[in-house]
Length: 172
Image (cartoon, rainbow, N blue to C red):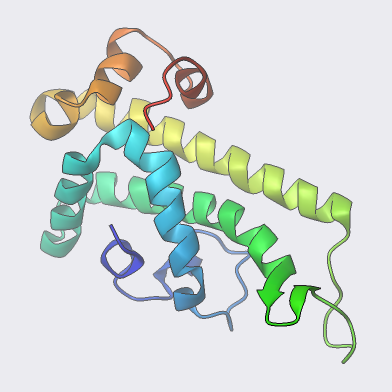
């Protein structure tokens, strides 16, 4: 699942995470969104159901599911992107954001850790909402999610937190 399918308008991701600078291109977040989907959503939803979600987006159906998935993916993408935008790899080696032109200040280590923790915690909160409040009540009408082993573990063994699920059943 690529960003252009999950977020057809490249700037749609900013709707879910208001702290993304309005001048930042949504394309810049493409690798982070793809990583977020692969690392955080795929283990819980499965590839087949993610394909269904893409179809829902195209058909503009199941908006409760698509909105919850996009919200969750956006926060996990921000979690993935924060370190990449402070430190970059260049031909001359690893570079850190600097204040040479006095246009911005690099974030302190504490501010970065706080932002990372907030993005990750928000992503898991959104994932928990997606699993328990959006998908679980509709399980009977979502055969590709209900048949996925992650669904069985989340719902049938009553693990109420994605954090707990990840600890007991790493599906990657």
